[in-house]
Length: 123
Image 1 (cartoon, rainbow, N blue to C red):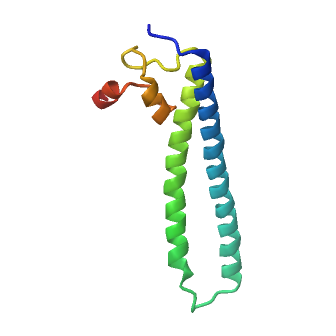
Image 2 (cartoon, one colour):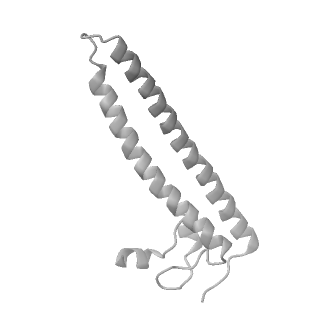
Image 3 (cartoon, helix red, strand yellow):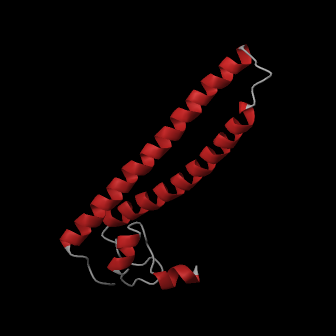
């Protein structure tokens, strides 16, 4: 199929993927906390309406940005989890499309990459 990564290189990527997974889960947790806080603020505003308050537009924008960030973070987390799964199966570093080794430089840049650049451009 392809070359195997050295155990030390594989461990380095295992650590990078795990650090990225933790970082992404933290972002999702922060978004959820803001969402909960926003619901509390909305409830308070309903009980104490202030016609002079123009924060509604900025809250809507923040919510829209959080939704976009959440979607992007979930997509990236899925890629990280997929790469970790491939690592557990002994397939990490092998292109899913061509079966060729993914260059270490690409894995350094994107530890969750599962295709070579050439295969990615074909997709």
